[in-house]
Image 1: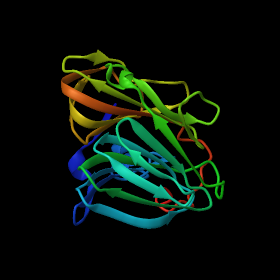
Image 2: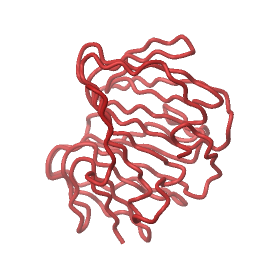
Image 3: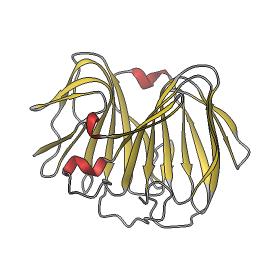
Image 4: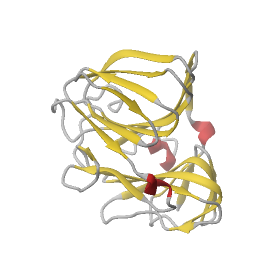
Amino acid sequence: MLKILRAERSRGFEQGSFKIRRVRPGLVLGSNADPAFRPLAVLDHANLGVGTLVRFHEHVNDEILSYMWRGTMVHEDSSGNRVALSPDRLMMMNAGRSFWHEESAPSDPVEMLQIFICPREADLPGEVQFHDRDNTAADGRWHLIAAPETSDAPLKIRQQVIVYDAHLPAGREIEIPKADGMDQLLYVFDGEINAGTAHLLKGDALADDETPLPAIKTIRPSTLVAFLVDRHAPATRAGTISGG
């Protein structure tokens, strides 16, 4: 049956102009479930006001997808990169045994999703990837963002997780991506949708522990992020964030 995790059930953190609403996606299956939709561990829906600086800090054994929705965030890291991230440029940090980074919003407000995934094993090499998107990303279809290393996705995850997004106009009906052996989870980054009998708003998540998710219809222009997860894949819990 359909399971909904409402935005208001998420825990909020705030430090000055830096605000996070932390979604533990496994709780969509019930309050007594594993908080991780293992190995999809944490979704941080973050807002960075102008002038926000998240100083250099280390991650270990986290696969971290930075999904940008609005604004420009300047990323610096221990590999010597200094890159402006935006909705046109996404990033995957494969932290492995160690990876340091700093993020700032020097010019305009940022809203984004920081996605933490447990890698298949601990202490893999630390690395970072960037993906430049073209203007087809807003064409009202699903777009593959990240997937396992053997896929043709633009960003590689060292785990059996696939990530899509879609920017949809009001009134659009669309099926949610699915794959054999993978559980679906849908996150409403922005907007308002109906999915079968479920009505979802910004920050809500949807899953079904028995059958594939129904097609959705947008009530307002909406940005959706869809996850396909092999919840039985080997995964380490040694991550700085994903292991919690």
